[in-house]
Image 1: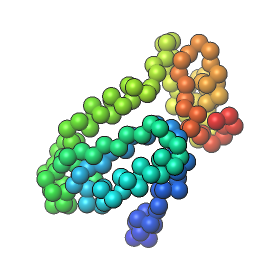
Image 2: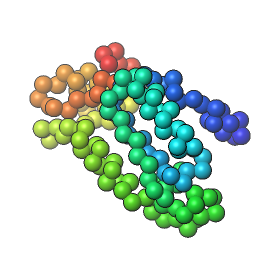
Image 3: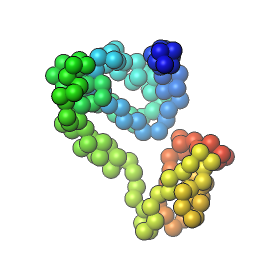
Image 4: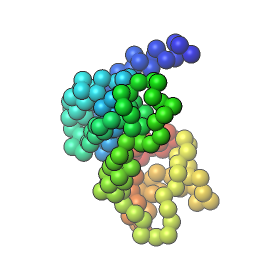
Length: 152
């Protein structure tokens, strides 16, 4: 388990972020003791700008810990006492999503896709089915890649 944990800390997200062109919402807690927030944010911003990403939001929550639970010092000892997400957590997420997601006109809802690109309902829709469906305004962002599909 320790080897797995150490690999996680060696991961550099910058090469991946330099290719992200879809909208991005990143949350940080100012009390995060695992991630150096003030150092990380400029690095992430630069990587997303190199990707020519024009729609990214990075939010730092006051009194937020690494898990975005409201805290006092971000230490491990307080984790059993802390009970709620930082103020603004849900509202920020909802506001961000509402400005970027289109609700379908029909009564159908978006289909969850599994790794094969097939839906989990009787219609078995694929990404290409949704993106070419003329009676619905649901569109999956072109930056979403679902293994098993060819038209993204």
